[in-house]
Image (tube, helix red, strand yellow):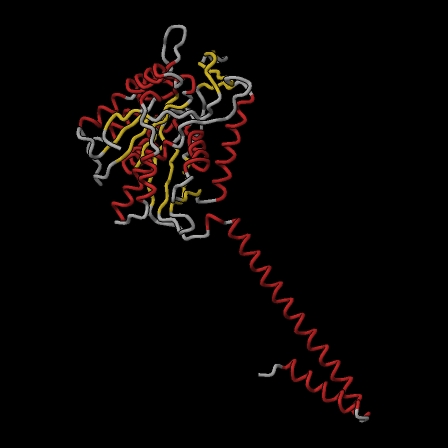
Length: 388
């Protein structure tokens, strides 16, 4: 089929032939034909260039939008698994969450058919900034005491699914201010979330557990607030969970770099944790003796890695302060065991998801997470109740 361009060319050839035969009357037609041809080709070229430019710009815009809104590329899932983070005021819960997220991105994703992304780019930025703060703390002496901490609850949502697929569910980390444990208004909210959580992270300050003052007094009750947390456990878990679905409780000592170097140190740390949290653990053991509905383990996490405890001092208000220093000039930010929170907690959630949905799409990821669990008691890990 002849195109418009082809017809114009044939017409011009015919005119040129008549002109060469001596028919000068067609000269105006010949000139007009050339003008029409050039105009037509210019129009086609301009149109093509415009379309290519528009397509290129459209593709570039789409690409930029996907990069900018990488966490909004898929529709949100309605399936959510709650993870409650408990601990004393300013004990380091948010730092733990940032470290866990950073270590998962660095190490745990390798060879794991699983994608975990912050639900919003703003949240990713917030966690990245917190990681930056942690990395820079090794530049100076680290002084930590009884902190005011946050006054509002923070929630961190992560989309979970197979790589390059729409997310199947969300992990929602609820970071509760330590002050809420003594607040009658918010106490009930924490209690309800404990009941509805698939995983509970009980964060403890190891330095407060193990360092004693001049009069051999322990600062753990004041800093870790284990008494308040034990009371809320008693209130929340008076009976078996109504959904009768297994819950995972992880006792997570942080700031423990100094007390996880030798077998004896780890044993000492575990003993203090078992004593400190014993009432809450025994409560659960009593009404769930076979460990069908609860699993409890100790997971020590070094959120900095390159520091050691140096000394205990008091501030102007006569409150204790724990001072940490770099182990040596070559020491750097090198957290340890943070990924174990996922190896223990996320694996149990994947199993729970499989049981509820009837899907086995995460079976491979679950098995790999379970294989990567550290169960060495010599390194501070210990299962206190149930099975993992």
